[in-house]
Length: 78
Image (cartoon, rainbow, N blue to C red; front, side, top):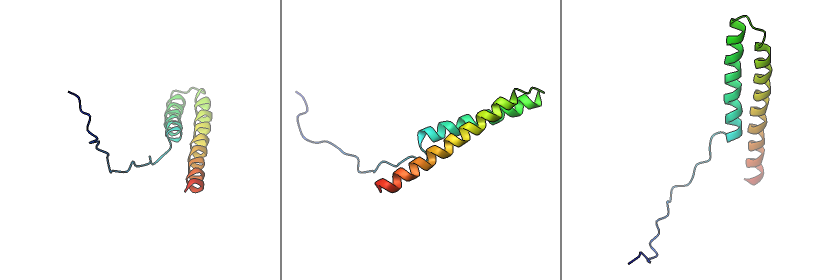
């Protein structure tokens, strides 16, 4: 009727940790998009690009923060 056997297959392949924490990756993407938006704004002669530059700086700092936090977490937990 149903499979009642204890034949469970477990993957012996260890899970790899991501190269970069997810929040750091998102902040990096926002930073790159903000830089592109700043370039386009300044190319069109708009001073709204200043806002994009500030957003790029903020997201850049967030990227470094999350990367450093992950590095500290790995060194503490081993």
